[in-house]
Length: 212
Picture 1 (tube, rainbow, N blue to C red):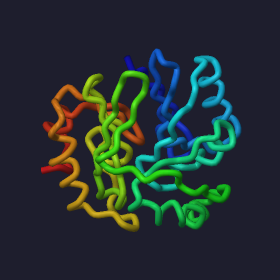
Picture 2: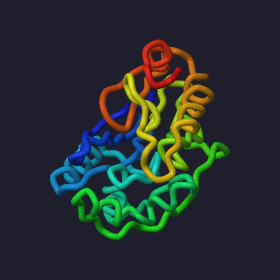
Picture 3: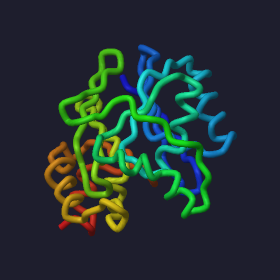
């Protein structure tokens, strides 16, 4: 059974996730840790749970979701994986961060580009990848059909959606991603978003005012 640990990091209140199971391998998703205290909180959890980080996944390339990429690499020796269409966001992350008063270390190269043809394995569990552009050109979501959850990045929030006014954003693309990808999942799938509280596919189908 996959366990999901959520951390809320940096001034943007970004949700960082660790997925792990009885294998003790773990996948780190969107490490937004910015301060040394946040880095230590993440590292201490991994140490206490005796986990072994094996993959580092970015659902998209906005800087608040990749602030901890270098820390994860320097601590555990694993490089980030992302969709190729968000490489331009990775390459300009330092510049964008400065616009919001953040100073980040030089961003590392990406080790692998992910598409819907790829999947992640965690022990005996499989996590599928959905390409869900709109908030960013290369946004992805991670779906575990066995455990009935989706890590949605900034695609879908509780009663809201990701903003589309940033470079590469498109409301039409985002709405299409939600309606034709995420809303094809069963109603009781839990949605773990990149900011804010969890929700469900069924709740958002009925109540989300941004998706008509």
